[in-house]
Image 1 (cartoon, helix red, strand yellow):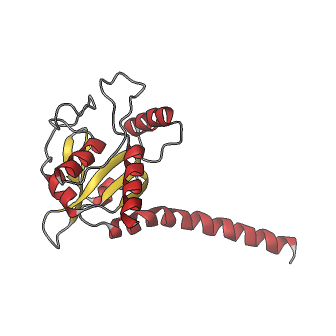
Image 2 (cartoon, helix red, strand yellow):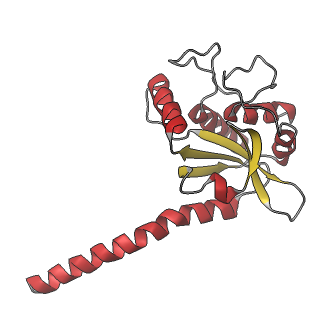
Image 3 (cartoon, one colour):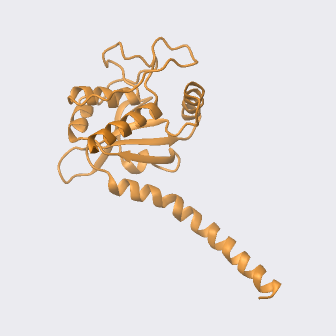
Length: 195
């Protein structure tokens, strides 16, 4: 093989990689969205100021790289109907489509963990609650942040998640549930259930 042929081949491989990369980046979203079932718990690594603040604080407290910055619960209002994600954001506890929740402007990465349909039912009871900017659980769910939403729904469904609460390096009054700690607690619970 001569140098000119090798160089052309290298250029074609580079072009093919550049063309394929956006398709692969979109592909994880489609696969993940197609796999969602009511009651599943979803996580995303968000983009933007709030996500970066959560990631930085979480990394500092946990001493390891942040994987997830936001969580929600999959809900289906009526059987056979569209799937939504219930999650707590600045506008309160709300419903978004999976495409919006995992959109390229919102999510750098995402995952789904098997849940229970009772979680979706209980999370739906919290729709419309205001966002908890103070990140406190002692208000009994009057205001809610994303990981608190998941644990409140699990507690109400009778399937509590034993997850750590950690003090953060910011002026918060209470220890909080970090997205990565919640994901690890769910993985550990699912491992125990399989044994």
